[in-house]
Length: 234
Image (tube, rainbow, N blue to C red):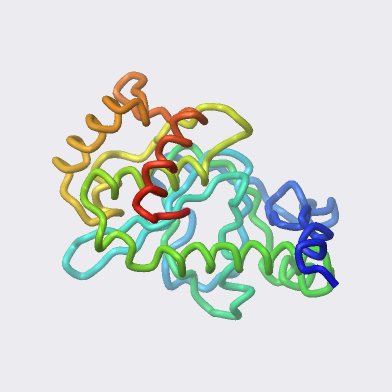
Protein backbone atom coordinates (compact mmCIF):
# COMPACT_ATOMS: atom_id res chain seq x y z
CA UNK A 1 0.00 0.00 0.00
CA UNK A 2 1.39 3.39 -1.05
CA UNK A 3 0.83 6.32 1.33
CA UNK A 4 0.98 8.97 -1.39
CA UNK A 5 -1.64 7.11 -3.39
CA UNK A 6 -3.87 6.98 -0.30
CA UNK A 7 -3.43 10.73 0.20
CA UNK A 8 -4.46 11.28 -3.41
CA UNK A 9 -7.57 9.16 -2.88
CA UNK A 10 -8.86 11.68 -0.34
CA UNK A 11 -7.24 14.85 -1.71
CA UNK A 12 -10.58 16.56 -2.43
CA UNK A 13 -11.76 16.18 1.16
CA UNK A 14 -9.73 19.01 2.66
CA UNK A 15 -12.10 21.95 3.13
CA UNK A 16 -14.89 22.51 5.60
CA UNK A 17 -16.88 25.62 4.84
CA UNK A 18 -20.35 26.66 3.73
CA UNK A 19 -19.88 25.26 0.22
CA UNK A 20 -19.71 21.61 1.43
CA UNK A 21 -22.82 21.68 3.62
CA UNK A 22 -26.04 20.02 2.38
CA UNK A 23 -29.32 21.89 2.16
CA UNK A 24 -30.84 20.21 5.20
CA UNK A 25 -28.08 21.74 7.34
CA UNK A 26 -27.93 25.20 5.74
CA UNK A 27 -31.74 25.46 5.89
CA UNK A 28 -31.44 25.45 9.70
CA UNK A 29 -29.24 28.56 9.65
CA UNK A 30 -29.92 32.25 10.08
CA UNK A 31 -28.11 34.86 7.98
CA UNK A 32 -26.52 37.68 9.98
CA UNK A 33 -24.50 40.73 8.89
CA UNK A 34 -21.67 42.19 11.00
CA UNK A 35 -20.21 45.64 10.50
CA UNK A 36 -16.43 46.21 10.52
CA UNK A 37 -14.89 46.11 14.04
CA UNK A 38 -17.93 44.37 15.55
CA UNK A 39 -17.51 41.11 17.48
CA UNK A 40 -18.95 37.92 16.02
CA UNK A 41 -18.12 35.77 19.05
CA UNK A 42 -16.43 36.56 22.36
CA UNK A 43 -13.68 34.56 24.02
CA UNK A 44 -15.07 32.54 26.94
CA UNK A 45 -18.65 32.34 25.67
CA UNK A 46 -20.27 28.93 25.24
CA UNK A 47 -20.07 27.76 21.58
CA UNK A 48 -23.79 27.40 21.02
CA UNK A 49 -23.45 28.27 17.32
CA UNK A 50 -21.15 27.67 14.38
CA UNK A 51 -20.74 30.70 12.11
CA UNK A 52 -20.00 30.01 8.44
CA UNK A 53 -18.65 33.06 6.62
CA UNK A 54 -20.41 33.79 3.33
CA UNK A 55 -18.41 36.92 2.52
CA UNK A 56 -15.90 39.24 4.16
CA UNK A 57 -13.08 38.48 6.56
CA UNK A 58 -12.59 38.43 10.32
CA UNK A 59 -9.76 38.34 12.82
CA UNK A 60 -9.16 36.17 15.87
CA UNK A 61 -7.97 38.34 18.77
CA UNK A 62 -6.99 37.95 22.40
CA UNK A 63 -6.71 40.75 24.95
CA UNK A 64 -4.36 40.75 27.93
CA UNK A 65 -4.51 42.50 31.32
CA UNK A 66 -1.72 44.92 30.35
CA UNK A 67 -3.94 46.28 27.57
CA UNK A 68 -2.16 44.60 24.67
CA UNK A 69 -4.30 42.98 21.99
CA UNK A 70 -2.84 40.09 19.99
CA UNK A 71 -4.37 39.28 16.61
CA UNK A 72 -3.29 35.81 15.64
CA UNK A 73 -5.40 34.36 12.84
CA UNK A 74 -7.65 35.50 10.02
CA UNK A 75 -10.63 33.77 8.44
CA UNK A 76 -12.77 34.26 5.35
CA UNK A 77 -15.27 32.26 3.29
CA UNK A 78 -12.68 29.66 2.24
CA UNK A 79 -11.66 28.67 5.78
CA UNK A 80 -14.39 30.45 7.68
CA UNK A 81 -16.14 28.25 10.19
CA UNK A 82 -16.10 29.93 13.58
CA UNK A 83 -16.56 27.46 16.42
CA UNK A 84 -15.49 24.29 14.60
CA UNK A 85 -12.32 23.88 16.67
CA UNK A 86 -14.23 24.24 19.91
CA UNK A 87 -16.96 21.71 19.18
CA UNK A 88 -14.54 19.13 17.76
CA UNK A 89 -12.32 19.54 20.83
CA UNK A 90 -15.44 19.32 23.03
CA UNK A 91 -14.56 22.56 24.81
CA UNK A 92 -17.25 24.73 26.32
CA UNK A 93 -15.91 28.17 25.39
CA UNK A 94 -14.69 30.00 22.30
CA UNK A 95 -10.89 30.21 22.40
CA UNK A 96 -10.76 33.70 20.85
CA UNK A 97 -12.81 36.78 20.21
CA UNK A 98 -13.57 37.03 16.48
CA UNK A 99 -13.87 40.57 15.12
CA UNK A 100 -15.08 41.55 11.64
CA UNK A 101 -12.42 43.30 9.55
CA UNK A 102 -14.77 44.17 6.69
CA UNK A 103 -18.52 43.80 6.47
CA UNK A 104 -19.06 40.10 7.17
CA UNK A 105 -22.06 38.00 6.18
CA UNK A 106 -22.43 34.70 8.03
CA UNK A 107 -24.80 31.79 8.28
CA UNK A 108 -25.31 30.94 11.96
CA UNK A 109 -26.25 27.32 12.69
CA UNK A 110 -26.84 25.52 15.99
CA UNK A 111 -23.55 23.85 16.97
CA UNK A 112 -25.31 20.66 18.11
CA UNK A 113 -26.79 20.14 14.63
CA UNK A 114 -23.44 20.69 12.93
CA UNK A 115 -21.61 18.41 15.37
CA UNK A 116 -24.12 15.60 14.94
CA UNK A 117 -23.90 15.93 11.15
CA UNK A 118 -20.07 15.80 11.19
CA UNK A 119 -19.87 12.81 13.54
CA UNK A 120 -22.33 10.79 11.47
CA UNK A 121 -20.76 11.56 8.08
CA UNK A 122 -17.38 10.07 7.14
CA UNK A 123 -16.63 12.62 4.44
CA UNK A 124 -17.21 15.52 6.83
CA UNK A 125 -15.00 13.84 9.43
CA UNK A 126 -12.26 13.49 6.82
CA UNK A 127 -12.57 17.17 5.97
CA UNK A 128 -12.46 18.31 9.61
CA UNK A 129 -9.53 16.05 10.50
CA UNK A 130 -7.53 17.33 7.51
CA UNK A 131 -8.36 20.97 8.22
CA UNK A 132 -7.44 20.81 11.90
CA UNK A 133 -4.35 18.65 11.28
CA UNK A 134 -2.99 20.96 8.58
CA UNK A 135 -3.42 23.94 10.88
CA UNK A 136 -1.69 22.13 13.76
CA UNK A 137 1.16 21.00 11.49
CA UNK A 138 1.68 24.54 10.23
CA UNK A 139 1.60 26.05 13.71
CA UNK A 140 3.98 23.39 15.06
CA UNK A 141 6.46 24.05 12.26
CA UNK A 142 6.35 27.80 12.82
CA UNK A 143 6.42 27.70 16.63
CA UNK A 144 8.99 30.23 17.84
CA UNK A 145 10.06 31.13 14.32
CA UNK A 146 9.70 34.88 14.85
CA UNK A 147 12.27 34.87 17.64
CA UNK A 148 15.20 34.63 15.23
CA UNK A 149 13.82 36.72 12.33
CA UNK A 150 14.66 40.39 11.95
CA UNK A 151 11.97 43.03 11.36
CA UNK A 152 11.90 42.80 7.56
CA UNK A 153 11.62 39.02 7.57
CA UNK A 154 8.92 39.08 10.23
CA UNK A 155 6.85 41.34 7.98
CA UNK A 156 7.73 39.15 4.97
CA UNK A 157 6.60 36.07 6.91
CA UNK A 158 3.32 37.74 7.92
CA UNK A 159 2.50 38.90 4.38
CA UNK A 160 3.32 35.53 2.81
CA UNK A 161 0.97 33.89 5.32
CA UNK A 162 -1.68 36.52 4.67
CA UNK A 163 -1.58 35.78 0.95
CA UNK A 164 -1.90 32.03 1.56
CA UNK A 165 -4.96 32.55 3.75
CA UNK A 166 -6.73 35.02 1.47
CA UNK A 167 -5.82 34.01 -2.08
CA UNK A 168 -8.63 33.36 -4.54
CA UNK A 169 -7.37 31.54 -7.64
CA UNK A 170 -4.65 33.76 -9.15
CA UNK A 171 -6.11 37.12 -8.19
CA UNK A 172 -4.03 39.76 -6.42
CA UNK A 173 -4.59 39.91 -2.66
CA UNK A 174 -5.32 43.23 -0.97
CA UNK A 175 -4.05 43.33 2.60
CA UNK A 176 -6.80 44.81 4.76
CA UNK A 177 -4.86 44.61 8.02
CA UNK A 178 -3.72 47.89 9.59
CA UNK A 179 0.00 48.44 10.18
CA UNK A 180 -0.50 48.48 13.95
CA UNK A 181 -2.25 45.11 13.77
CA UNK A 182 0.65 43.66 11.78
CA UNK A 183 3.03 45.02 14.41
CA UNK A 184 1.01 43.41 17.20
CA UNK A 185 1.05 40.07 15.39
CA UNK A 186 4.78 39.86 14.84
CA UNK A 187 6.08 41.57 17.98
CA UNK A 188 7.63 44.74 16.54
CA UNK A 189 6.77 48.43 16.68
CA UNK A 190 4.89 50.20 13.92
CA UNK A 191 8.02 52.07 12.74
CA UNK A 192 9.64 48.71 11.95
CA UNK A 193 6.56 47.69 9.95
CA UNK A 194 6.59 50.93 7.94
CA UNK A 195 10.32 50.65 7.24
CA UNK A 196 10.06 46.96 6.30
CA UNK A 197 7.14 47.54 3.92
CA UNK A 198 9.16 50.22 2.12
CA UNK A 199 12.04 47.75 1.72
CA UNK A 200 9.71 45.04 0.38
CA UNK A 201 8.17 47.50 -2.08
CA UNK A 202 11.64 48.46 -3.34
CA UNK A 203 12.37 44.75 -3.84
CA UNK A 204 9.05 44.36 -5.73
CA UNK A 205 7.87 41.70 -3.30
CA UNK A 206 4.73 43.74 -2.67
CA UNK A 207 3.08 46.77 -4.25
CA UNK A 208 0.86 49.59 -3.05
CA UNK A 209 -2.63 50.65 -4.11
CA UNK A 210 -4.05 53.77 -2.44
CA UNK A 211 -1.66 53.32 0.51
CA UNK A 212 -2.72 49.69 0.97
CA UNK A 213 -0.54 46.64 0.40
CA UNK A 214 -1.21 44.47 -2.64
CA UNK A 215 0.41 41.09 -3.29
CA UNK A 216 0.36 39.36 -6.67
CA UNK A 217 0.97 35.69 -7.30
CA UNK A 218 4.47 36.42 -8.61
CA UNK A 219 5.25 38.68 -5.66
CA UNK A 220 4.13 35.94 -3.29
CA UNK A 221 6.64 33.61 -4.95
CA UNK A 222 9.36 36.18 -4.25
CA UNK A 223 8.31 36.43 -0.61
CA UNK A 224 8.45 32.65 -0.29
CA UNK A 225 11.80 32.39 -2.09
CA UNK A 226 13.44 34.85 0.30
CA UNK A 227 11.96 33.08 3.30
CA UNK A 228 13.11 29.70 2.00
CA UNK A 229 16.63 31.07 1.59
CA UNK A 230 16.54 31.57 5.37
CA UNK A 231 15.16 28.04 5.88
CA UNK A 232 11.73 29.42 6.77
CA UNK A 233 8.88 27.43 5.22
CA UNK A 234 5.11 28.04 5.27
